[in-house]
Structures are given as structure tokens and as C-alpha cells.
Image 1: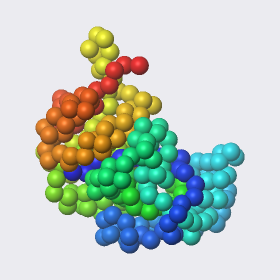
Image 2: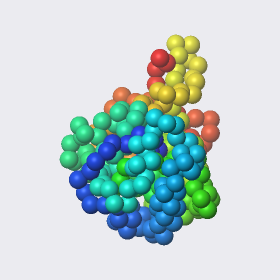
Image 3: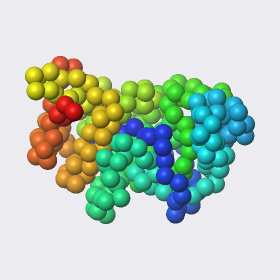
Length: 251
């Protein structure tokens, strides 16, 4: 089983591990693609004005420019701890047990625009790059889509894709019965379902946390539906055979 999560724009500073080593990350065959993006971002980081334009940063985000100037030499930490924001607040990685974190390392991938999909426990630096950032000489979607899709497709087992659509485009999930996109929807008292925006991230984080605490890898979509129900979540098939709906109460 693989659970694919999007990253976040915001990241925690610091880290206790050595600097970035792209050969140590999940899917080592992506190392050549990773080196290309790392080099492009390092070159962009030499020009603050161009970086701010390419990364769509305002005056209050100058710390992001400083991060990018040193991301190849700065300390690293596990990806599950590096990323912050609504989804990762819901995940609460710092409160997971060692066994739950180990399970996350085996089954959770966080899809970085800089590094492609990395394991939850892979060591990554603080940096700023989004799926829609403009790098000189590199189209992130064209660069990542085919090689990442091939690596995910090589996984023999269930794929639960909780990524945002922008990150899903950087490496589409395989089109097969045990690979599904999970869409978060709210259900009102009238039974009508609506797509969520801000709260969809929180639900993804909390759902992933529940799966990690359960500690059982699902083999099939039906297993995932039953497993979610056993820990208080409604994961249901939608009208699209390639999608599941994670149903939460309307706010």
C-alpha cells in the first residue's frame, strides 16, 4: 500500500541530519531527475529578484530566498516533520509512536516538486518550490510526469492518491483497479455532498494519521473502505470508478 500526499508550501527550519543526498531517497532511480531540478533551483537562487518572480514570493517571504540559497548544504530532517501547514497539522507526526512512524516510512509518500515522491522518513532540507513554479530551463510537469508515474506504477499494491491535482499531474497514478484518487467531500444534513477546500487538507492529514495508528496495510480498495470504517472514517466509492470519496460532516 502507498498513500500519496501533497507537500506544503510551509516548512520547518533546522534539522539534525546531514545535507541532502538524492541517492538516499525513495525511488533511487529518480536520482538523475532530482539532480536536474536541484541544479536548476540552485542556479535560480543566485538571483533574488528572479527567484521572487519565479516562485511568486512577496516582500514578507524573503526567508524563502535565503532557504533556497543554502538548501543543498543545510541540515535535513524527515519529510513528515519538515512539512507544516493544515494537512500536516492534522497528521501530527510529532505525536506518532516509533512504530507508527516506521509504518509511515514504508507506506506514505510526500510528493515534492523539488525531489519527486519521497518517503515520509526520507531526510529533506527546507526549500521553496511548488508544482507551478517556473524554473529556468525546466518544466516541472514535463520533467517529472513520466518517470514518477513509472515508479509509482512499478509498486505492486494498493495506491491511495490524496495529492492535490497540481501534484498528481507531476506523476499520475497508474490506471488500474487498485489505484484510486481520494476526494474529500462534505455531506450536509440534506445528504448533498460538496467538495471541500481548506478543510480537505485537514481531513487528509487526520485520515492518514488514523491509518498509521491502525498499522495495517490495505491490500485492496475494499480493504481500505472497511479499514477506514473501523477507525471512524467514511471512505466510499464514487460514481467515477477511479475515485473514492472521503466523507466528512459539513462545517
